[in-house]
Image (cartoon, rainbow, N blue to C red; front, side, top):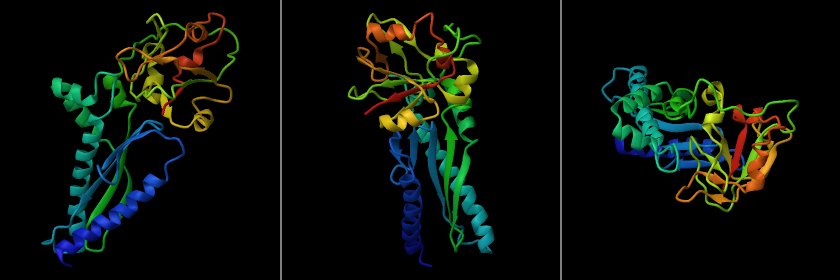
Length: 276
């Protein structure tokens, strides 16, 4: 087959395959990036990174099977490059991205590259001439999240007496142009911390991260983090100079400090943020 024609065919078929994955997104999910164009995407709702990789066959291989093995190795390297580029765009907080940390700290860069190599292959497309396309995925949490969310052996104390009235927390930040981040914070109007990663158990950070994000309120209420009876609070604004940290009214902030309420769900990371 003409090499140019095969290249065009790979692009066309790959786009069809990847489009089907993008279209399978659930309503209201928050994503950044484009699998079809930029070859990587951050999903802040299910807290994963998805990337693609393509490998052309070795035209000098003796058999299609040999060509395919080589192409699969190339596709995995391509997927690794794309997933690393996507990781760099992840916001840790309002001011810092993973890229910032990788540039300034060589140890962090090495550790991120090591974590990225553990990606999971979601889908493999084999072509008759031995070419291969891959779709791969890794979690924002676990080993990656631990690099940037500094968990403590003991979380900040939260009242946990009696039966909890709520199963989770939904923070409605629509209209504020808030951006998703690994470690968002919530403040009161006096600038005092109401909630951040310090309130989560180490296990919660490892398994779930600090919060998930939705663009649709109905979908957010159906998320397992919110549970059957979430406490819903409307954010009153963003903290000055921040694109990720939310501010609550004094009255609403007190709901998350009520010494008589069982707020243990916060320590478990059962927090959903709804953004534009």
